[in-house]
Amino acid sequence: MTRSAFNHASGAVQKPSRPTPFSIRLTADERAWLEQKAGNKPLGTYIRDRLLRRHAASRREVRSPKPDYAMLGKVLAALGPSDLATCICMMAKLAERGSLLVDDECAESLQRACADISAMRLMLVRALGLKPDGDL
Image (cartoon, rainbow, N blue to C red; front, side, top):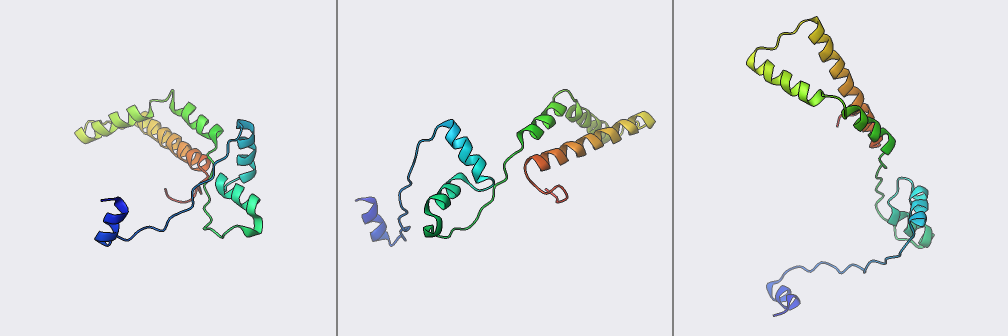
């Protein structure tokens, strides 16, 4: 029994068929140029809009932010030599045991670590094209 015969016999609702996609080969330079022109629009949407103009069927607009790779690189560079994750993990374990002694130097170190983490969070939020004042 074929799939369509089974679906018909079982009363399954068939999905409406979608048109087959059209593909085109581009050079790396052509694609980079199109992506730059597309801005925040998905590349396929940009090409469809430019090609069909007023004959294009209306579609729901989706904006996807482009990551800022330079800023992401800065965050990774800051994280690379730092021992923030290890230090915070050790402090959490010491705090759980009740053996974390917090003197002025330790408190200052904790404040610096928190400020560094906040700065990295802000850079990541901006690099991903999100609003910095909103919660993630």
